[in-house]
Image 1 (cartoon, rainbow, N blue to C red):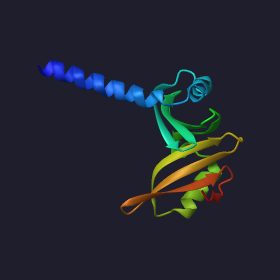
Image 2 (image 1 turned 90 degrees about the vertical axis):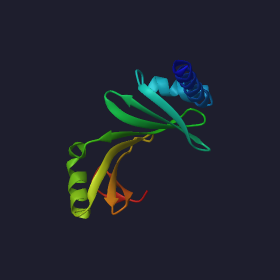
Image 3 (image 1 turned 180 degrees about the vertical axis):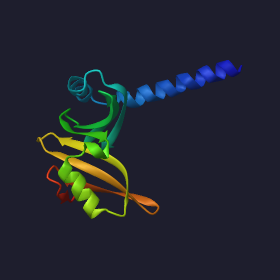
Length: 141
């Protein structure tokens, strides 16, 4: 009996995941597959009324990529190590946020060719995000 319940739960879980991912427009999925061949563990979400976001692993890194409803790629975010930041960005972060704890670092590549860096900083019981350009300038998001 326990086995039957376990199998039923697995089937229900799998079908609800597949159902959620069926609502992604085919052009979005096709463009994603062209841009990120061999991506693994792909999970789709509707980011907002005009964007879809895929979270996945690709080339050994954790990524997320956003596409608009027409399937056009908007941006890709990859989790990276602090030491992988450009030197100017590392220096700026260390100067501007000396006493704060860094929780997460990500590289954001935009469709227009720009690259930004997101630094998640822990402050007491919450976190905030700060963004830098490739030259180490903190930018408003």
